[in-house]
Image 1 (cartoon, rainbow, N blue to C red):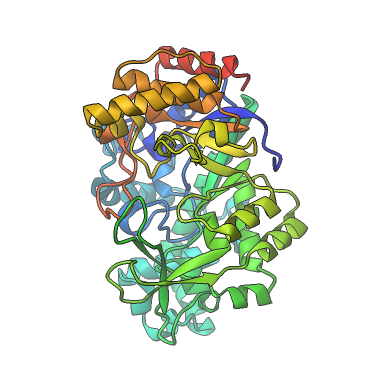
Image 2: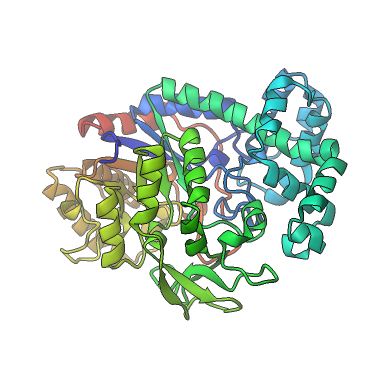
Length: 499
């Protein structure tokens, strides 16, 4: 199964960790959560993309696909390095509860610039990081956005079209004020993430990271490599990404991301993708590729469309991309997010690559015995979830049912558990949500992942994302670390099913 060991895991993004600075960070709360996972006896911690978010605060809309989110930087570690003091840290404290992104945007970069002002940019380790050029496009791009406060297609033409001399002169003019500041953020993030990952791995836990299929239009990726995307002469997309009408939306999902120019990518040996996967494999132990089906065939929506109802399916790179990645990088453990509208092509591609697909229990109990999400129909080479970050929580999902619907759901869930040989009593919606967790771990799937909201029995006010709803997402946060009681529950289930 693509180098993925049988086990159980918990899904909780870094942003959802508790703490007093308005958003989860790579600080002590992340280490405490890792300790909680150890008590659960799970082998995996799944997170969402670590990237610096852009429009809508979504980790699936980043200014740079290889970046780290500066909001996740541990400010107390900067204090310990002498770059901040306690009084300055106190100004960054925010109320517990959901992430307040506007408040973060107003305050966090100010304190990070203060830390940068005290940092020695001639320090060898940082100088080597700058010299590597890994984040050059990102640093120039963010420096331009700092100056012009607009999307890159509105930059002056010399910068919009990345004329070498103009870019070089601009970089020199803002080298210390902005360029190195943005590099400082990525340098600090990488150091802190490496330290956290080493700690998590030392506990016998692997990190599952997420790679969005698409990148944001207003990103250093598109600005720095426009030839790799389907853009017109003005560098505007000719068509954009999304999916047709489905379970989540009657009018489809209009994501708006630019589409790849797969012919151009193929011509240079998929170098951009190979570098992206290499970078991700250094950050994570296992990669989950979001919207995997778009690599077989992708949905192209005409630019300017109001909905995703009209579009066309076009061929992606298929197995050629993965053959190249394997040749260049070897066997990278990968999970294929193969949800949504599927056809024989994407199923064939997943089987060819050998990557496990995903099975969502919230979708399993529609009464159809052929439902591929039912545990009895799951193959071992798959990953079972109660739900994902795009679904309601299990309890929230159950709360939306009528009395009759809930009664039917319980009957079907009991039948599934009995088929797996698991007599598990449940009556209330909270108990039923936990029974779904048991069902996931009892399934034949090699890997079972439980969102932290479902382990804790939280309702729909703790949902992470509602697809096709542009506001109010990605805000869920724990108010405190999960209890020993919940660790004991997860440990008991994990050990019982030999995970």
